[in-house]
Length: 468
Image (cartoon, rainbow, N blue to C red; front, side, top):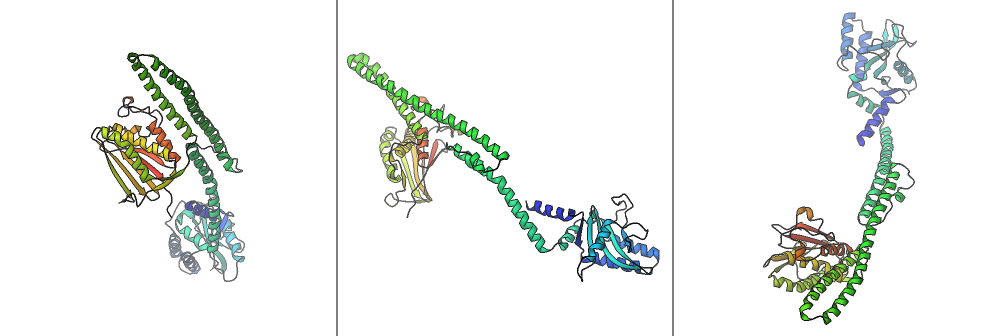
């Protein structure tokens, strides 16, 4: 952006008003003085011609094919008389005439030698010389390409510091306004996309203000797209909730009927009823889990908020899960630390505000999964650490683990892998989905990683209450 501003400035300096005037530096003035001295001297013409050529070549290497824009032979210097004609009685170049007139508008003490840029030619002058008793105004003419980088210095010398300050301030304000105008709608769309990703309804078009450009139409299309996406998601949530409710009522009637049949049938036939009852109970649990997911998706939690001590919560979960762990001879390895330093429960309890039973169920489900998929006589590692104002709970098992490509899918409802998380090991693929939504209901995050050398590592991050 800065380079564009500088380029624009010098392009403006070179192109304004057709002919631009700039201050000549000392080297150019010195060449003009020497050239005037040589032209006024009485040295022989051949020698004078060689000296003049040498002085003119001091600007840049000679260019033998230089041509004036009018296709007339290019002249390296001009001697202009009072009638504004050269020694060949031809009308002087427009830039030379402008330099002569420009000179008379300046104050006393003004340096007469200036640079005028017209098209691709540079005219330097005027410098009075006396030849054969007649006064002429001396001008040097060069192609701008022969000056190369020196032209930048001439422009810098000819522009006062306040012109630079004013120009850059104005261009800076213009660039800032342009950048703000371009980035603001992008930020609006970015913010709207994040809200849509979190399932929050929003309108990007309303935040575009009065503008009716391409960004406005893009925001309009974005709102239409997001509206359809949210409607589809809400329809799925509603369908999940409605189906679960509709299934629970007939399932309850089936369970009641089975209870009555069990009393009427004999012992030999009762085992079939028990099998049906177990399947009905399993289906009832599944429907309950679906209802929990639907409620969490809508942000509904049927429980009062309270202050939860994470240390006590983890201890309670491990006590309840110890029976299953004992059956498989699985040991718990527990690590608790604050910013890398171990602590005792009594000294630091890591408190947060949330729903005790919901959070208990979410963490317990992950712990029980770790026990279920770990081999007998294995180990389940559980760590509770505080990092800044955040609690981090990590639960790692020693099971067969999950493929790298499935790590993001295990928190989706009904997802099961073909290996460790198979149907034969129990569950319908709803436990981790409920845990994920329960953690998010507490403003937290949950993720899964591969536990090296084998197994699955689930990491939960929860915001803590600010101390003090």
